[in-house]
Amino acid sequence: MNRSRSAERGFVTRCVLYIVVLGVLGAALAVAGPRIWQSVQERLMQRVESPHYEIRSPADALPKESLAAFAAQRESLFSDLNSKLRGAASQARIRIIFDPEFSMTKTSLAAAQNYTISGTTIRTRLTGKTPQLDPAADAQVLLSVAWGKPASPEIAEWTALALVGKRRDEDIGMTAAGVEQKLGHQKVSSLLDARSTQIPSSEDRAVLGGAWVSGIVEFGGPAAARKLYSAKISILDENSVARTLGTKPEELERTWQLFMYSYLAGMPSSSQPMPANMPMN
Image 1 (cartoon, one colour):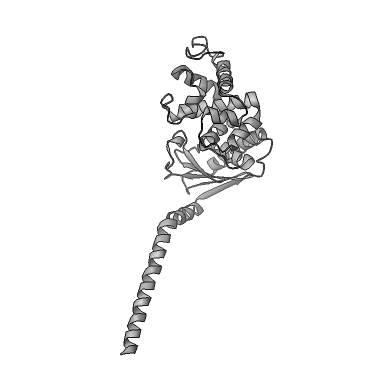
Image 2: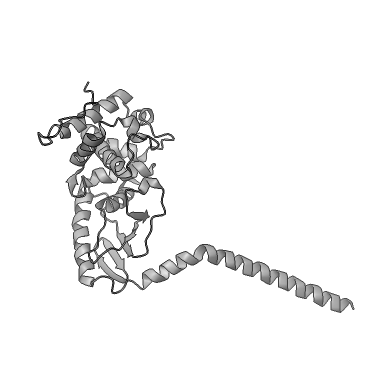
């Protein structure tokens, strides 16, 4: 009788243990399963390599020659960006994955982007027969290699735009001048406040942010931009930024106005030389 009960208890214990193990395995697969499947898919993709890039796309989605030409263009971009960083990212190697099922899962901060970055890996959507990727993606990766992890995703995005120096093949300053012609002058306080309704478009805010960091580089040098990039600022506002850069909020605004006016003054005569709400001190 005792043996029968002991056997029953042992059987129940083993069943409970099996259920617990299966539950743990099920939970682990639920968490890691998508990553494992993504890794398997990427291993099956066609691959092109160059000195600083590994580029993958679904097999037969693109001619390999197109990927090779894209890699050559990226090497030229890499050289330009790395030169601006004084060679600090020379050893970097970037993975670019073109995924036809790619979708943005980030917050509205990245609404102006069409890619995600994890370490030195960039993922983006594959559209059409010609590979396309914003140069700012490469710039963000190289900045993280050269300067370390950014303290703010917004400042990282804007610094990358400033490093590239262009937005959609137009000088970032001229693009920002066009935005200011449309919206009026945007003060540093509005630019830094993500909740501000003064700049409703995430694309316009990214352009103005890139131009603003370009102005910081012009007046304070690359060291100032790096200081801002690395500073752990709890609240991103003009007072915190001014303290980080060793200046005053009013001086921060004044240099921003000067930087923008230098572009606005060079716009075609049919445009207003500067927004009516831009006071020049």
